[in-house]
Structure formats: C-alpha cells, structure tokens
Length: 243
Image 1 (cartoon, rainbow, N blue to C red):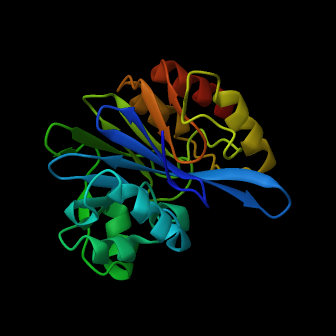
Image 2 (spheres, helix red, strand yellow; image 1 turned 90 degrees about the vertical axis):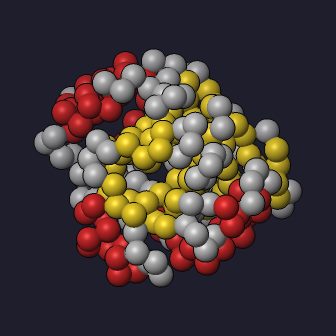
C-alpha cells in the first residue's frame, strides 16, 4: 500500500493485476468512520471507476498520478449518478482531455448528456469494452441497490466485479485494503442502520446474473475490497434481501 496524502490518509493498493484501489478514510460528525474508494484500471486506455465527491478531487487526482499520467485516462466510469460516484466528473474531463464519461445508456440519456462537459460513451447491458490487456463487461442493475441507471462493471481477466454500493461497509482507516473475511454481515449491519436499497422485486435475478460471472474480487466503493467465492457471496446477499 502507498500513502499518497499523509494528511487525509488517501492510499493506493493494487487489488488485482493492473487494478488499483484508491481509498480515502473519513470521519463524519458524530464519530461515524467511513471510506470512499475509486478503482483505476491501468492499461492502453485507462479507466477510472467512481470519481469520488467533487471536494475530494485533488486527493484522488494525486493518487491516480502516482500510478499513471492523469491526462492518459480514457474513460471515467461509474455505477450510477450520485456525488461519490461522479461528483467530480467534469474536473476529470478537464484534467484528461481525451477522456469520456462511461455510463449506462439510461444514465447517458437522463443525466450525463446534460450535466457532463463532454458527451458520454454509453455502454449497453452485456456489452464488452476492450481497454488493452483488460476487458470490461457492463451489466445493467436498475434499482440495485438504487438508481434507475445503475449497473456494475466486471473486468473479465481478473474476475474483478466493480460492484458500486453493494456490500457497503462502515469503518475507515482501520479496515484492510483487501480482506477474505466476512463482509456480508458488516454490510447488512450497515444497511440495517441506513437502508439505502430500493428493494426492487428483480434483485435476485440481477444478483444471479452477476454471480454467473464468477467474480473472485469484489471492488466495493465503501469499505474493504474482498476476495473469495464472489458467486456464493452474491447469492447470500440475494437470500438476505429476500428474507
């Protein structure tokens, strides 16, 4: 792990071949420890997944620059439209002049074509995008966990699922970058306190589609990344949501 900002604790850790977790721990008023993660795929056409909030841009920029030239970024991707997902999108588009927003077709239609300074490169459900030695596949997950435009991105060679807000864990600097320990229990405990799921009736079907990709690394947006039997973990989440 490399600490890129001593004051904030922002750090970079390679969680899979050529895939880097950028993490910034925060402490909210009232003593709630939390964290924000972005994921950088270093390749011929580099991709940053999640931008972080606008006020965190300088920290994430510094972390990306520790891995590759920021101006080389080709895609700025995100699961759904929310500040921590794409709040600093236009800052990244300015910093990387050849980059484009990468988002679902719904996100492009209803939001990004209007709020982004450059038009999006929309990606269809099941579509594959070649980055070089990495290839990513998009899967629409409307309203899972929330947002009509939501989706997940799988890097196929490393079986890394960029799962957005699924498996959100509380905790900040105390959490490891990657864990093989249980994250379903902590994430369900967090959801019990702050239920951010939409409870779509199609959750099990969508989680089964994600499980079918047999991920071995879960690139969570909040908390530790996780390694193990991702298909089993996703099906266990489906059971929890059905309970």
